[in-house]
Each structure stands twice: as C-alpha cells, then as structure tokens.
Length: 56
Image (cartoon, rainbow, N blue to C red; front, side):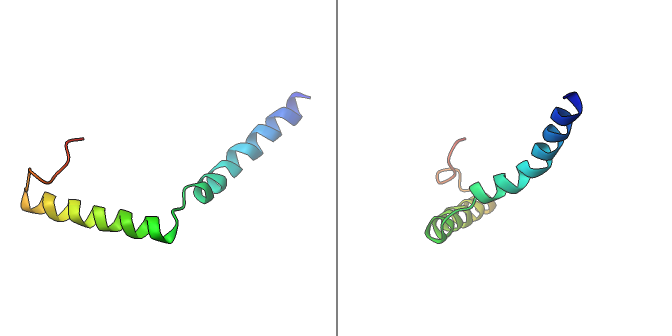
C-alpha cells in the first residue's frame, strides 16, 4: 500500500506542471491587454516617470 501511494504521489508531482501551464494561459484579448500595460510600464520605468509607475 505504501509503495502504491508513493508511486501515485510521484506521478501527481510530475504531472502538476503540465496542468498548471494549461490553466495559466490568457485569452488572446487578455494577452494583448497585458502586453499593452506591460510595455507602458517598461517605458515609464526606463524614463523614470514616477507619476505613471504604479506603487506596488
């Protein structure tokens, strides 16, 4: 029984990253919106524009 549970736990641990990647995908519209805000953040950070950089 312990050998079975150990094997099952190992299989679950190996499979978890594959399931996590699928669940974390954004729709194309959400990906575009994220990219737009990310590019704005990068540009504001480069210019050191503290008024536009959100305080995290």
